[in-house]
Image (cartoon, rainbow, N blue to C red; front, side, top):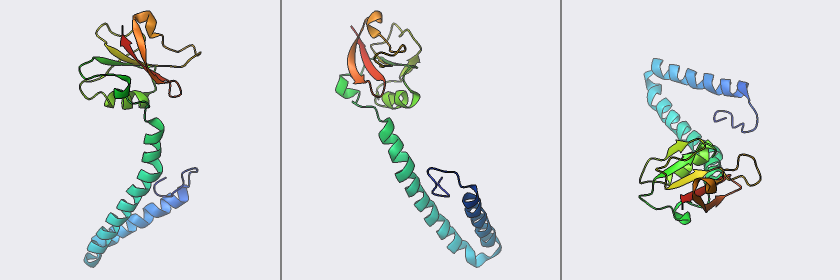
Length: 156
């Protein structure tokens, strides 16, 4: 995608052509000493441009799509609390939620939260069979986002 700008389709010939031209330029730079600095400068410029395109078209949209809302702090999760995350929460959201807990590592659990857990992040899918019910384990829902299928629960 980065070589061809094809965000919706695979274009192998364009990607291969760009790769072959880049390799030929590198070979020319090695064999012709006068080309080393210009080829290196061109390589740096192309890399900077490519990274900008990748950031704008891939990284930022993925971050926006997978950023959990609301923030963990807005739900009242506080430093010092032992936080665990259910493997029922999608991996990217679980990862992003865990990064908001800066005071401790967030451990994972499958169905039953550990006895040491003060707060858990679990799947919130109202009406679905895999909706996690924290009340049966003594937790109270703090909030979360049913559209993103996650909720924070605090031990009562």
